[in-house]
Length: 264
Image 1 (cartoon, rainbow, N blue to C red):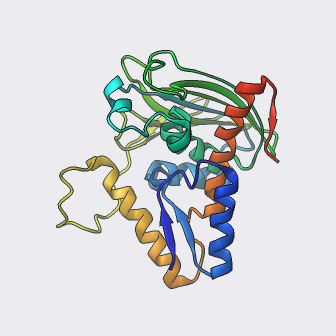
Image 2: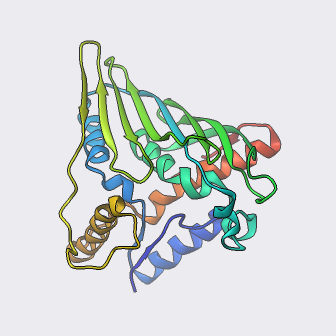
């Protein structure tokens, strides 16, 4: 049976690797849901990077400034625990944008970070805030800043700067809306608000689901089905999904040891 699972693929790298190995041994596909990769803005940004429009990507920024009430963490007993949730803002919210950053910049090589719980410390074991620096195998450098203690919430963005003097930013504001692509160069600024992909299930009752994200979940499901029919890997494989997991687990380790952590 082919497997399409929600993010994160796991909360430990060895568990993720066991899933990957089991699916490869069984000859089945493994995909992991990171629906923001299917934003038209993200797809266009990836294409521009592959085509060399920015030159060599050299710097990145991943900023996640969200807000969660205490009730969010107390709604279920597992939320905000190391054993079941695996982490806080990095594991649950920022992982989407860390995945985007790794998709755009390549394989992460080293990370150094700090974590804290500024607002929700009485309710959770895990972090509500984190900052980190990441070095990629290409030599590119990036920063991560993530929190669920931002009042007011400022949404999220992933930014990449290249050697041709241009910057591309995917901006999600407010949280849960379509990502917008902003391209800035020396002489011009262009902002694109892309349209949704086609609605695959126009008659489905989706009243209890965040409407802005529905088209991208369905787009990823469609890609997974197409991958099975075309005998190719899906856009986001199990191995792809481990990149973001490696980064955030590296931040947790670094925050404990106060040392940089190799991800290679």
